[in-house]
Image (cartoon, rainbow, N blue to C red; front, top):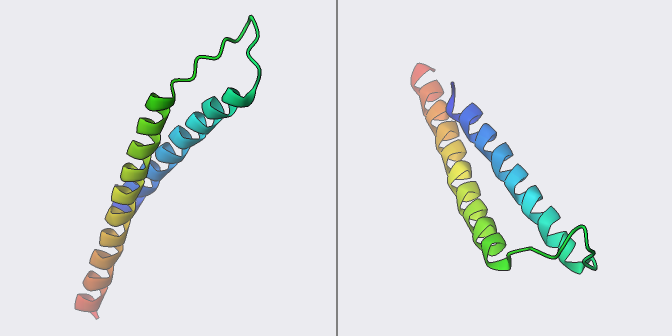
Length: 78
């Protein structure tokens, strides 16, 4: 599996985690009812979003490095 494929897969996972967090955070503004009590843990969501941001930066750096390696390899072969 290539570096790009791994990085893109990871970016997709990060995007899904951020989307899940956004959905949970959007429930804060909704009035709680008996079936769905307001149970959003803001500190956990902030930590999760911070981790997602760090993961995103690391995956983008890996993608950039893989692109640079590919470019250098092509230059060597030319």
